[in-house]
Picture 1 (spheres, rainbow, N blue to C red):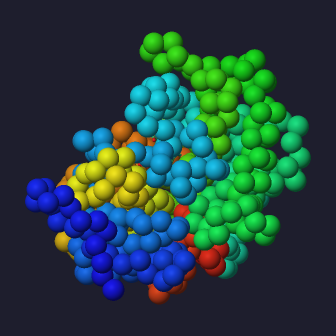
Picture 2: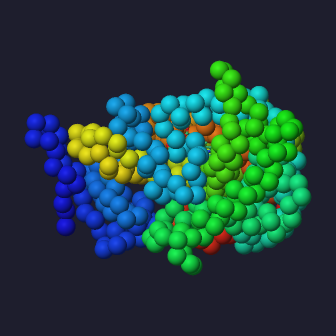
Length: 450
Ligand code: HEM
């Protein structure tokens, strides 16, 4: 039954936000986990751009469509904050991460962290990436039905350990496996229905995971402080903003834990989506391979990666089809409005770029894989500034987007040179949205050495 979120002030000319809570206790959480697009599609039909529902034990407004997303992400009247929004979902596990900071504090941290993501640093990271990717792929055994998602996840974890951590010297394989499990536990705790430290719950596993990660990074901190090397951990220990500000030890640990999470599952799902669609569209696989072969190297530089035009189109299309971050969280800290609807202080907001990416108003045949839509003669992504927003927008726009592009393209370049692969044309990935999306079947591909 539809009800309003709150009555707008009498003199405001604003409309009320309509919506419905859903099931007792769980609200709409299970519908979201199963199929967020279907849930958002129903709400769009019934209520339009802004409506309210209950998820994770709270009332949220869902913000749909590029105009509404733009308004909240640009946040011109500073009514929305990240900290209170994201903290509800991931605060106990990722507190202190850049995405969970606001205002002056956020600006100060972002200015320092920006120094870790310059073009020069990225160029060096790409040089270090090539041997790690090559060694990681040596462990793959090409076969029909090869489960590419867990293999990619383990590869991106190897990359994180060496490029981000600068290696985990002295750690055993079992310890690294525990680190991986701790990340998964922290990320998955975000959509827990039970949000108390009860034995056997996802919430408790997340809290335990955070402790393991904390201890792990603190163990390596003195060595990274002592030596300036090219890995992100050491860089965070040594960088300074233009005005000479640096991160404290606690800040470095918080940022490392958040960065590894932010970089890991997002890149993995993008890669596995690309493997799927290139497997289903051999003409695009051939095009991408021809450009990779034309580079004439298995250790491309950052500048050479820029030449992989078709791969760039495929990556953009896959980020549209399966957005690694389907929603971003905010909370109103003062009474405000979104697209003429009254939003009282304290309301949580879930901004959904993933829904925009599937709107037929902006994307002709939105469910069809068609990388050419991003090419210069079509530019479908330019019809609205927020039509394509997998990296978000406003002051919190992803700081690692160019790193992500370089990592994804490096891995795909190596894959294209080593393998051919095929995926049934009627295969649909069974995506689970418990946390960030992942294919529940491990995403089988028929992988052959070339
Ligand atoms: C395909 C890969 C990626 C996607 C789709 C992605 C997506 C996003 C999105 C949507 C946001 C905005 C969140 C918000 O507004 O609340 C964000 C923020 C962020 N991302 Fe990424 N990300 C990716 C990869 C990376 C990588 C590789 C890194 C680091 C190496 C990274 C680090 C961050 C950080 C630190 C923030 C917070 C920025 C801020 O609040 O100022 N991300 N990302």
